[in-house]
Image (cartoon, rainbow, N blue to C red; front, side, top):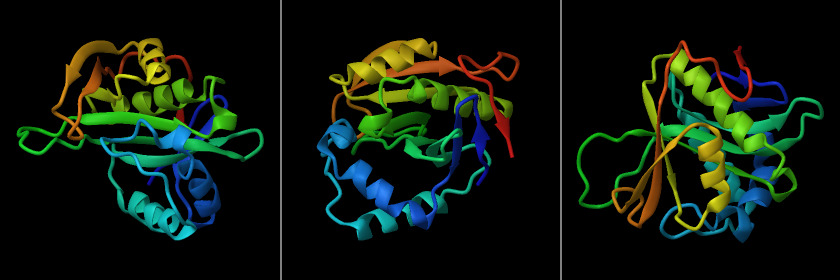
Length: 187
């Protein structure tokens, strides 16, 4: 899986050595409370190891699940995903591509989610992805602000995803549109 570079961040594949960080990130209610219909904090490092293996298995030219790393310190900051959205039971049709993020409390409110998402979106657009959704918990105002900063359009609440009411945002992507607010390169 590729790495994506922005001004301050590296989005890179998760590594087994990241298990302590991932466990610390996802054992916290405040970082998982908006993830899916039944958010559940991790209970052991072995869950983090298994999750990293699943994340690494997603090897696709556009989709991915990346660790967000600070370029200046090499410290882990969070997680970013770009993958087909999970449809609710009884929903049919295409699985649109969604983008999502969650950051460690020490990395929140610093613009990292916006920068990481902008880099991933610019990279995906350059690889031919035409549109993307952000499927968010209706109570997650911080993610709603990130979506708006990234130029997403609010589509309203639907129960089509994750077996629960979700506030969905959408954005049309263009390979010609310069990435905002952060530039990107790929290795």
